[in-house]
Length: 327
Ligand SMILES: Nc1ncnc2c1ncn2[C@@H]1O[C@H](COP(=O)(O)OP(=O)(O)O)[C@@H](O)[C@H]1O
Ligand SMILES: [Mg+2]
Image 1 (spheres, rainbow, N blue to C red):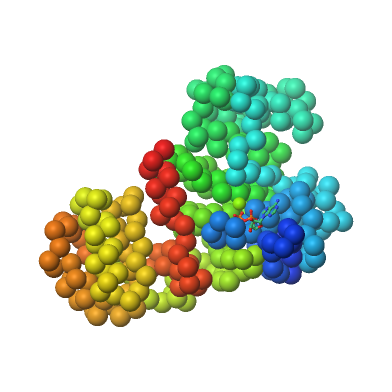
Image 2: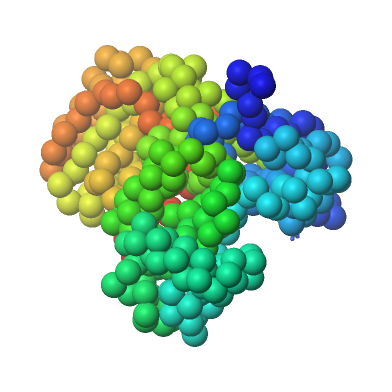
């Protein structure tokens, strides 16, 4: 046995949809027993990559293996060792949570007795016992997502693919899904997680590949990525989120670096390669303003700044935070 078996390996994966290049030579290596984050904005190629790995879609060229099995020539073997949870829940609205799990378990070939036992166990693990006998149509977004995660685990997969497991969830539901994912990893499952949430990669992933336009543009631990980009970040926190726009405009005019607004935490962030210079100019720029500044300071970069530095365009993080706030 090799010292570090790979759960996933891809080499030069390419996939076009007509004129659209979805995968442009994707190379990935995911060590078994880890959580691997595939990080990228909308349209980066994350779902396409997951669908190829889950044998739902054929790449145009290149090579991909899951748990040592070739996705093309050993697709059935691959399917027997994976679980998949999609971006959109696949559960049946008209059935209860328990009925959904039992139905999937029976589809996967479990006996009625085993299907019930497995469902009970998963309902408990995902904190759904109290809602088990209610129809899914009455579930919250977070409950649905946890049920969807549970269905992905019926077969006790070696490798679990989670495609944007928390997109669109409110912050509290995201925390619960994160807890569930961490629990899986403690049980030895390899998790390949796609996300647009930089904080999610930060919290869950041992290793991250940042993808943009269908190829990996950076890879490493979240911390290693940060130090590769270097540069600290200036944060200004305002009391009233209504002041965010004014502060962003003032900072934008005073500094050459791109300004990012984070509505959720009342924060405006700016890359601050030169700490003192940026801080001084920011303080001057804000001096005459009516906005109440709660805090201003230079901090270590988050993955959002890393992404911006790598790609030259901002990630969609704060857009999604807004969606979450609005829902
Ligand atoms: N079925 C499809 N037909 C045509 N274009 C598609 C299809 N699926 C994805 N694409 C395109 O391929 C690119 C990658 O999409 P996708 O893998 O869904 O990215 P992500 O999951 O990172 O948002 C995007 O430009 C998207 O518009
Ligand atoms: Mg997607």
